[in-house]
Amino acid sequence: MGMMPSWTPIVSLLGILTLLSGCSSPVVRSQSPENEPMIEERHTTVVGEMTQVWGMRAMVVEGLALATNLDDTGSDPPANSQRRILVDDMKRRGVDEPNTLLSLPSTSLVIVRAKIPPGNRKGDRLDVQVLTPSRSETSSLRNGWMMQSRLQEMAVLGNRIRTGEPLALAAGAVVVDALMEGEGDKVAETRGQILGGGVSLKSRELGLILKPDHRSVRASARIGDVINRRFHTFDRGTKRG
Image (cartoon, rainbow, N blue to C red; front, side, top):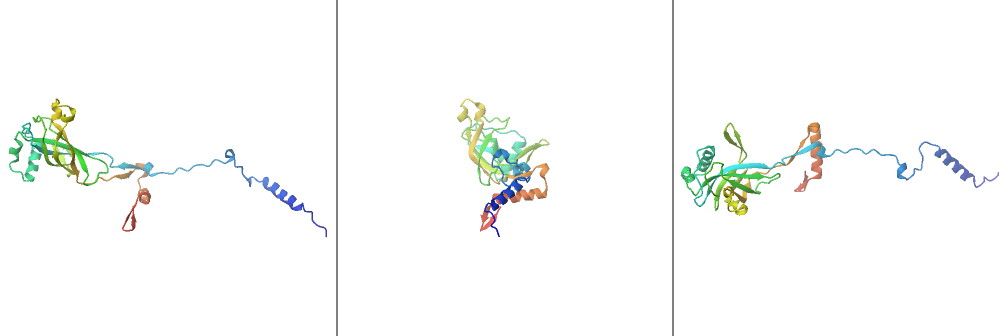
């Protein structure tokens, strides 16, 4: 029996490679980027495309208060809704003869305002603005001390002042704007600040609202699950979103 030539396996291998090279899908692909097929990128929907943030607006709260310790620069407020609200509040606090106290030149009715920022927590301090009403005869709030005031959201409806629940308390020494804006400014004498004079009574929550095109129970559940997996804490060893 004759011996098979040693080059026979080489010929057979070349034949196999020739057949494979004729197939439509080459076994060996070029590594050149120009020859790679284009891969279509899939769009990933993110939470920001499906929702909008709720609670990012600063909340303005107001109140009425009595400023005392004035250097005879105060005034007796006119008989209007602001005076009635302040007198009622003073009575609830146990103040005797509130109208007599309001008539003293060392006191003045003042408007109190503060802004509660987004994400504010209960107990946080707030800067407070103090100013006299538009028709007040008070000439200056210098050296004044503002008695405690409840600050709440206010609105004028049907010629009456409507108020919500108290959201902050404010009190303290008034620093008039004239100390920084110039001694000759009469308007600045009737405006002032109490830095850190307010304290928040409630926390303001931040949240997400589903946009109209994505409002569904399923979308809400998916977003809640994603957020809880990304932002979480541990309470007694238990993971909580």
